Image 1: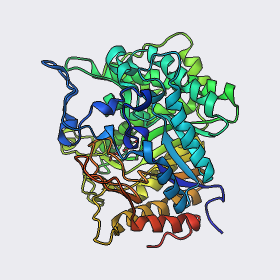
Image 2: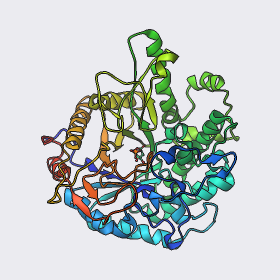
Image 3: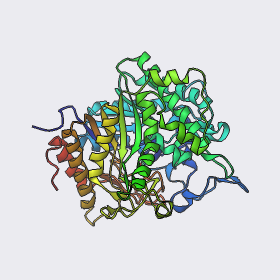
Image 4: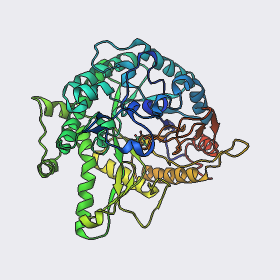
Length: 476
Ligand code: BG6
């Protein structure tokens, strides 16, 4: 008898801005990432005081990406072959509203997603739709200041309403914003924020975050009015922060760091800014400007479930000097945990941290959880016969799934598991192709060379067995 219920949603996750390509096809406007290069140059500030907006590079990885725009049928067929019950994908906002501030949607953009939904339906795969996955139209960023501008709330609601009206009969689980807390770490792709040197960064980021929170609540209201069966989720870039030592200062520092992520979900799930936010904002010199009725909106329209990504735990010290030794892992920086190994990109690997994180989140909110991202970005080697022996990925996933099941045994209700980048895609933070997460290999390199052919990795067959056994067989 499986620990997981028979309706457990096994699958994978992708995002429009990292797979589609077709960046200017059929009326699509520019996505935020369409102006970003790959590799080191991606880290350079987008705004250079001497030159203004930095937008001329030799190569933009998102322009073609893995060409899901033209190959979605082949890709979905491969997902079906693995036995996917669900696919988490996002709709590209600028494909539907090229600039973001139009009143009428781009019908050609919607027609593309109609076909994606048709194909998923053909294979019995349930769509889990992210409305905004790092994909605010670039025009809104440049002309309006992105989510810092309250008008973006209305533009988002206009867009979300179009999606709810058109697809509510096909989608049950919606996610409003991908990794809402990422606005603090990658404010450009998280919130369309082009922050300049002398700006009050915290003020801009938290005010923009408030607008995203309001937009999420109001989208929940609209979704329920259109179809009361719609289920709306928030999405957190999760990963518990551990204290560096048992020193009380480290414990306090870890608590504060955790609050930096939970503040968003406290609002979205409990319906109000938590009591600790008052001091936190004072210390940061942040003042959230609210409109009349905002508190009531947040209180009334909370989320139905909590989705999150988990790649690793983090480590924090109460000592500023020690914290200077933090290394990058995802967009988060963390101290090195001596008990953990790390990937080639320095992301620490902590399967037990997934169980800890799931328990923490559920203890805090008591709403169903959904793991909508987890996985290992690594370099894969294609053998002469086309096989790819990604045992490191299988090990990572198997150990995480094992801990996920432990958390379910602990009593955490879990709707499903969609691993990140089920097909190789362009990395969000580094823009590389070399950093691969997929069960399916895509022949394309960091410079955009390659046939774009798809190949099944060893993990493809392993995941097929996992799904087939409903998680009972994680062996490798
Ligand atoms: C999450 C994002 O932060 O992590 C994804 O939701 C992203 O969009 C994923 O791709 C992995 O990060 P990266 O930088 O390795 O692509």
